[in-house]
Image 1 (cartoon, rainbow, N blue to C red):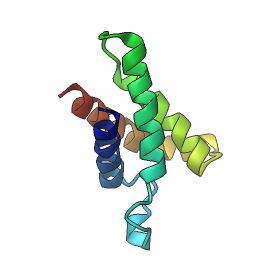
Image 2: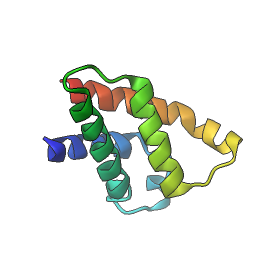
Image 3: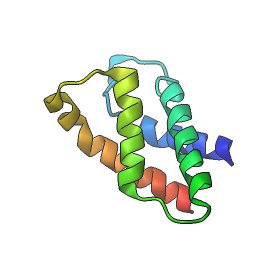
Image 4: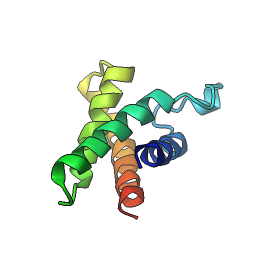
Length: 99
């Protein structure tokens, strides 16, 4: 299941391209590391909850943490520029995980 979540998260991150790197020629595996970290954290949260639902806010927090570690540090305004993309990605990740 974790591998399936990782692949789904990677697809979401590739589609969202929060950093806008693909038009600049980034390799197709640009977000692979981040997808693995996010998937691992989401899977851990799911396991910890033992069936209780997780929220978009929780997934967005995971994404923001991974993003700050991978691409940051960010000034508040730079993080704000990414917040809509992170939120869209979190919403889609949660939708995929729930299905």
